[in-house]
Image (tube, rainbow, N blue to C red; front, top):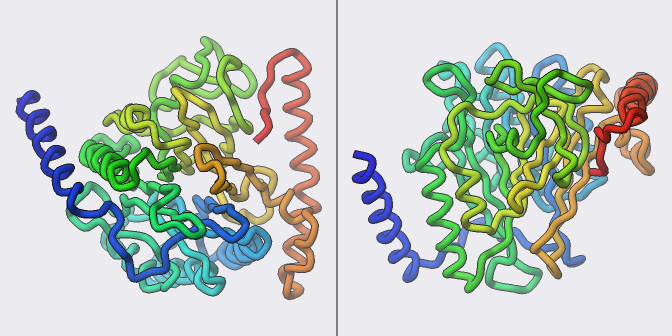
Amino acid sequence: MKNLTKAFCLFLTVVLLALSVSAPAYAVDIKKPLRFGTDGKFRIMHVTDTHLSNDNAENTLRLLGMACDKEQPDLVVIGGDNVSEDTKEEIKDLSQKLMSVFNDRNIPVAATFGNHDSENPDYYTREELMAIYNTFPCSYSVDDGALLTGCGTYLLPVYGTRGIVPAFNVWVFDSGDYDDEGHYANVAEDQVLWYKMKSVESELFCGKKVPSVAFQHIIVPEIYEALEKVSVRVPYSYKHMYNTDEYYRFNPAMTNYGCLHETPCCGYYNHGQFDALVERGDVLGIFTGHDHTNAFGVKYKGIDIVNSLSSRYNGDAFSTQYGYRIVEIDEKDPSTYQTRVVHWFDFVNADGVSELAKDSAAKKMLNEIRFKGAFQKLGMNLGVFFVQLFGRHVKYAD
């Protein structure tokens, strides 16, 4: 049976690749194509785990709007676990308010989903949520229909300032919610096959492999191969998601970024997504959310496994650990990228942010974050200093 399955997949791949020779990889869309800016840069803002509720929505959306005004991104990727509320009407209302932040600023949006978005299918399925997002002109999100597992696995090409062939690609994957046994899910086998076929199709159309980044909600299981296993728990080491008595921390032999603050919560079963990315060699980094306070990256087998922190406002708590990520690509050399994490505490203290506060409520919010965040940051810095004082590096430059 296994051999028959492999034979069928090979046959399907050959057929689709044959079709791709006569059908361009990038059909003309009714939307304006994504392009590098006149400065030669393409900036992506990764916004994830907003968990919008009636308690936090007003300030979360206000902060996101101010961040967009300051950063001027060319694309916003919404990374899942977007809305958390108790009624169908509230979910729809908050989803529309989230999209309005970007639509009002004419910023293209690519959305995917997390494990919490469709936990109650009696309210909204992923497809129904995507339909809400797609009522907004700024949405570049794709409902892939019944073709693939989940909803929202797609490819967005980014064209050069003047070119007619894509210079860069943005992959978006729906990493699912839970498997049949209640574990966290992962990108499924049919999605992996789809990626491999589209990647080859892109290479044939462009005459070369197109450098790219990928976004999804749940981190790949290979993160534990990229970390160092220790037998006992020590500061800034965290228990394996599924294996008891295993603890993991940054491996000094790897190239690391940022800080590891909690257990990486990957899916239980591995369907070969990361191996496929390594095999194809076009993805520079895979960006995830899900783990709210993790803002780190580890280079493994030539690919950066990167986690972005939660973007919600949480009653000004965790302002030193919540925020957003910027990914910037230069058209002159799209084979690499620059990324930085912006915590809300650092954001509100940045130059020019105070001028973005349009009303007294916004100014009050900024002042609260500045005051309480100062104590949070002091505590965090003391913890990092104490550990590194004894010879173990636990915080790396973003």
